[in-house]
Amino acid sequence: MPIKATEGLAPEWYTPPGQGDGTPTRFKIRPLDGAEFGEIADYVSIDAGVPMIKAAGRDRCLKMALQDWENLEGVGGPVPFTPHNQRLIPHEVRVAIVNRVLVISTLGEELEKN
Image 1 (tube, helix red, strand yellow):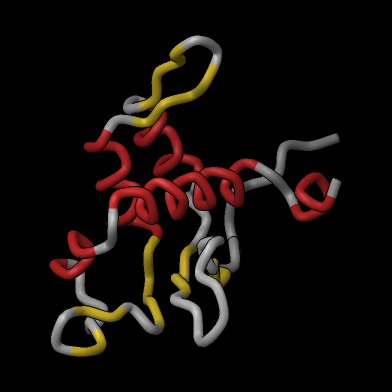
Image 2 (cartoon, helix red, strand yellow):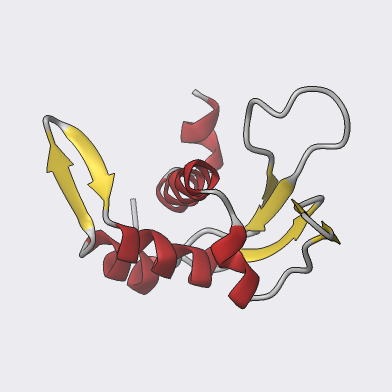
């Protein structure tokens, strides 16, 4: 079977778990292409058999893959999507978003369904 190029990867809306009832916050993310994934891999290490991505890698991944969000609330109301405002996403949510980006960047739809 020939190697398939990583092109035409479609973005998706990701809703982090544990938000309860109401209108959830969700994030529009896209898979990383081969070069981007390789760049992020430089920030990944294995700790006791568990892949760990360093903070700099998470930041870089979000800058590349995060395209928009809905219903992210701040003290004064909705937080507009801007690259600068990405820093306002809570740490545990940032980790969940990056994990999802890595999953959709490495698995095809057929594998992900299994």
